[in-house]
Amino acid sequence: MEGSLHVIIALFTSYCLGLDITLDRDMPAGTGAQTSCGVLVCTENTKTSRTNNDETSTTVFLNTISSMTVFKAVSSGSKEDVNNKREIQIASVTTREPSITRVGNGLKVAGYLEAERATIRVELAQLEDCWSTFICQVQGLDSHGRETVRTASQVHHPVQIQAGNLKSNASLELLASIQQLLAQSMKGLEDRMELLQKDLFARIQSLQYRMEAKIGQLQNMEENKTGQQMKFGDHSESFKQRSVTKFFFKKRMEDKMDDSKVIQSNGKGIFPNVSQYSNRNKRISHNILYKPFLCDLDAHGGYVIIIQRRVNGSTDFNKNWFDYERGFGSFDGDFWLGNRRLHAITSTGTFELRVEVKYNGKEAYAEYDKFSVSGKKDKYRLHIGSYRGTAGNSLQPYNGKRFSTKDSDNDGRNDTNCAEKYCGGWWFDRCCEPNLNGKWATNLAWHTFTGSGSATSTSMKIRVKK
Image: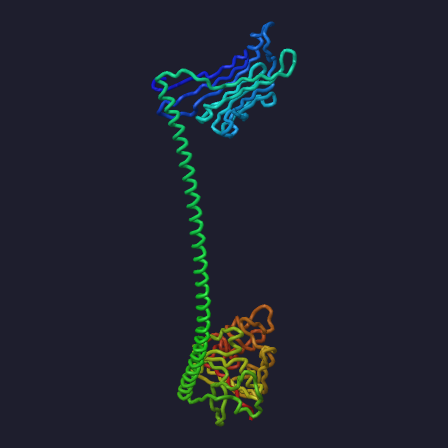
């Protein structure tokens, strides 16, 4: 090809009739990519051997081929004995493995073994291989059935090189030098990379130690901060408790002052506590008796405790069991004193009950000479005595009945909850009248006085029996 230096140097061809080994070296043209620097071919043909056979020849010919192997002769490494070489196998085909295809270590190998022919072709990519010595060895049986080995070598012989080819040799030497320089540069780069990696690892390890130390310092600071916060929280909680106590004390005083104003406006008063007015006082847990109660004066100048009042509909009486147990509402309007207090008060002695009802501008009352409420375990059961008054004895049928609310049904009916039906808690018995805690303007009933109507105001008062 024009512009390229293609030198085919037939260094040695062994014409052992059928066995042939050749090495064609392709010199680079100076530009462009070069995939290989030479091609080695080893061939054995039994047909050629039989054709060239004659009776006078002393050469041993193969009748069948069992294997073909290509070796590379390399130096033993001793500087004193440069001619001492050893052989390295680079390719082989046998009757068991009749074909081979392999690429690696700068070699591209292709070979096959047929009935009368064997060939191994090796493309050489490294300059060192292109100037090496190769040996081709064939094993098989001769015409007499004897095991036979034939060998052919490719060796370098001096040849006459034209003046125009000197440039090719110089280029080849230059390429070898460049390859050596590149190898040295790569080795230097690898050493440098190794040093950089060691330095980087040392820096990373140092940074890791410093980070762990900083994290430890932060954890200590966090623990100290938590301890300070806990101390501050304790002081803050103590201050909060004092503030809350002060607030409730102030609120209680304000409530007492407000209640006092309401009582003064209504001509009524508040008992400081109940125990001093009971002639059979006995101690009750949680100091239930030692709390303010709304009181009034009866016709004889004695004190009565108001336990229930409905005057303006300001309070919803459709409450749950807990609300009725502790009481609700306000002394200046509608309220229920609370079942727990009723039990605590009436358990200190004998009390009387007075019920006052107003309807259509008329007023009436009902008095019972005994009144008490059982404890929580007995569902705050009602107990009343003999009746006298003008409103009628509507409460007598419910003597001995338990208290019911919308969430605690104790009325004796299985089909409905009377407290839920009439919107208020009471001592119900089959949802019959009366019910002074019902819905305002609808179910405030004392049927012996209001009939089917709703009372306009009610109050229930108790006092110690004289």
